[in-house]
Length: 64
Image (cartoon, rainbow, N blue to C red; front, top):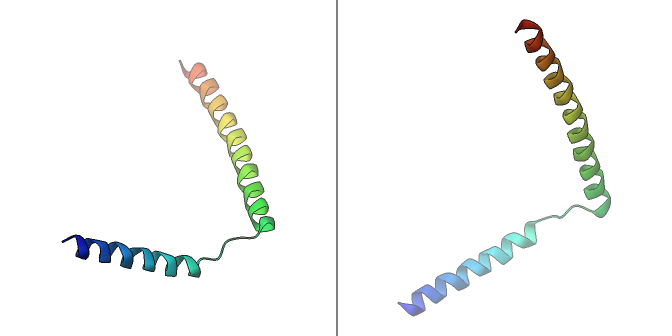
């Protein structure tokens, strides 16, 4: 039982190592560029949602 479990662990780790060799990691420039895009998008969306929220609060206050 122990031998079977050990061989399955070794097989799993061998497959993990093989899959990690296929991974291509982004360069520093690509990482910085993608991070910048995400941060700018989050900032724009937070402004948009803030304006929508303010408008809806104003609209509800006018109705009530």
